[in-house]
Length: 604
Image (tube, rainbow, N blue to C red; front, side, top):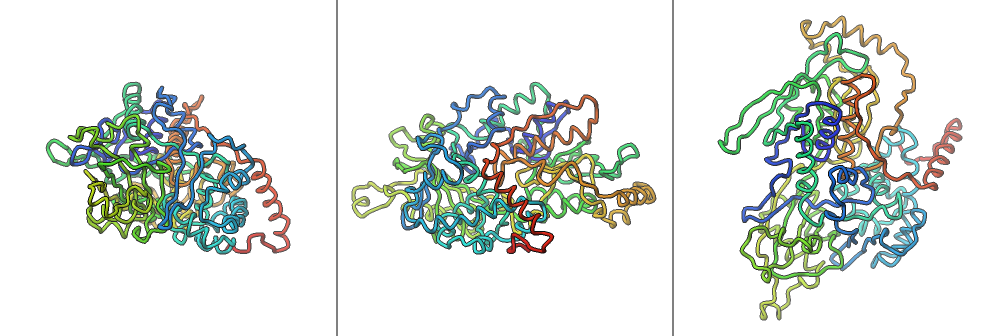
């Protein structure tokens, strides 16, 4: 398994439990979170602050499997507040802890948040109604979904009549911190999936909580690694960068109607932290799961020309763009109170087009404040707030120096969002000005995948069509093992294969048989294998790893009874009105199709 994020750990867990001997490879020095990452001054630091939404059933199940009580690691569900240069724009409520009755979506959200949009007029909020129809329409079939995917979210908002103010004041900042790009640079289909999953599926969909102690790595990955290593002898190769995936022609007993090639080994470079030396190694494998983002997959494909030649699917995926991020942390000498511990920056010129969030860690980790300061010299009375600030789509901020980024945060962003952070002349005289005792800025170029318009066609599927024992995992995957039309197998791969490695006659005969078969409807239909968790989220990444491992076990161990399969819990069912709306829309489309009338004239 290549990559020790949520997808890689999910795949490793499932494969270990299915009886495989698993090796997990990652370039990080400590992907299992066995030690705490620290800054140069010795303070703890984990890049990127991530929430856990109410519809994360599989991650919650993982905690139970590890015998960890949810309440011991999570805060209660918390509010989130949106700030602009003009003040507070909106506050997202906690529906599950409210006395407000749970009503059908989106009626419940509209009524419950009526007073929480402090500047946005009701007529602008009501303009989102047009987007609700598009959400019902986009899953009608794969062709329709792909058409929505080719459209920018910006164009869809205009066609659906969504007001400019609603987009600028609320939707744009939400997308910048959810999919990390503005609407004019995002696939309309992926935007609708994100908004539906996090806000519109149910009244309580946006309820979110945060870690109140530790980090994601030492809360989840460390105990999972210890369990898998002790019970299944999981091997973890840290400080190891995968250079290439070695593929060869499948043997006569391996070749089938699904694939022509097989992964033989993984080549990687392992850095020795003690000696400073890098060793080149090769690991023979029976199968591999690439649990990587677009940037990581691109690096692997550049070193794997044979795989690139035979798999157009992975080559397309490796060409997808990625997004720059910056993670900052500030340790202050004074404590500041905010309406919410979780906050979003909106419409600030200082962001230079980036999305921005800030989290009051001293509020979230109130019961474990010592953890935030580490082994430092500051006494309890000298310690103030600790703030995590993250920037996404941060290409225009990355060239700035650390000091300039700090100034942007402390002089332009935080004073507008935290009234007590503002400095007056009397503060200067009375020495009441907030002082930054320490700070850390870390840059992550290309850290997350970019869902640009037209990306659906490029996104990797779980099963790599041309390579029988190679699978992919990650939150950007299309969870599908559905075979692609065999005519898409690259003829170039056949022309350049030597007779020694791949008898051309056998290959051509096989392809001829596959082409002659009628493409009858498969039992696997559009989105039938998909999971309900959407967007760039931890739940989707973890589930994709479980799913890929299950499919690999089925492929490599075609036995009876079948190998153990990791249980994948679904998110909550769509509400009845949504199910009926989609059904009615589909029936209407089928009724008008013979007449040459389309119910979605904005699609091309």
